[in-house]
Length: 451
Image (cartoon, rainbow, N blue to C red; front, top):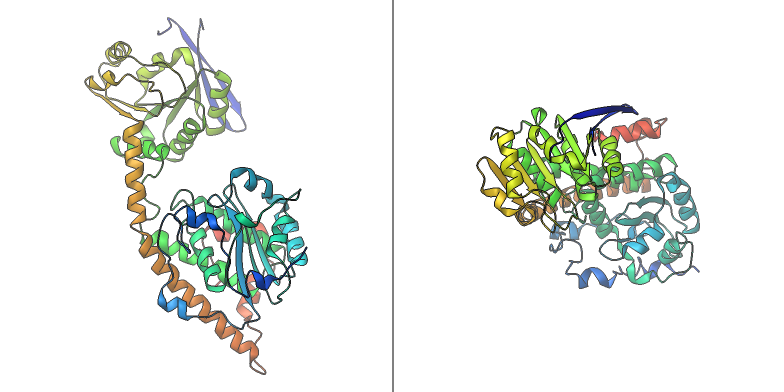
């Protein structure tokens, strides 16, 4: 299949290099009904085997010590309400989603119409949540979510709601990635930091939410440092990249990888490989435009589909993730390829169904072949390993919740004492004054927190 002659074009777009190989041929109710009279929970999580306080089938994370604690004063109620991938289909989550540019305005509107003292509005692809503080009994959480919808919908069955201790625990779990679709993922932490800073900069947060979110970030940092909740592959694409990293003995900076395919899995692999510092990434697809787009976005090199086997002569790894109904690499093709490579070691990872690489190829000398079943087994083991870390994560969360409640209670006592402080120290004022949103987000990304 190798062409007799080859040349390449180089494009420079937005600071990213892409090389292209080609051949010469080729209504308001009462908030007490949700918070003051006890927490209501959507039925869906329980049906899915979720615990009352946890996701991923874990037991409730509240310990006796934190259960005995109480938030200060009955007139101050912290709540967390929302819909997520566990309770609502993607169509509904999309309908309620709020663009990041609109978060501040929507948070202000929700704070006003819901008669809330403080609010943080979070919107991601997997959840839309409202964290709030209220001193009033009137208001209706359902109507708050209805205001996010452009049309009347039945939302009550999909909404979960927690108050006070349970709300704090939910916030901590979500921030640490313990309630995510992929247990222990880290992207949600950055999303929550951004949502919190937007609300703080908009002036809709206060002492309680500031303390709560900052403690959640501190707890997450400790969880990442002291547990293995974020280690190991828990998806096929991360398992593939982890396997490459392991078999190449962490020498990715000197290696070349070809990814055949331009779908979601293939593009995710390219991004992960680029983040790991792979020196050269080739991207090929039947649709050259799709391959070129992925290469441009990720800084790779687009290869014409007909030139794949020619380009394989110089790479160390080939990852296939296409929907092709037939084999892209047969044993005969592989034998010829290895002769051209002078039998230099080649790692093949086939993530496709049907398989793109014939199983017989794995029997060739210096060829290592892994298919999707092997990668799924690695991902399942990664999930089990992370689940074993949940108890340690919950202990860290409980400790931080205890510290949070004790601090809030102490500040409430000072506020109630004649001549006492209003619960906000001079240090608080200095640290929160005149800080731009961009700078604050950068501070939070570095986990530089107000204590």
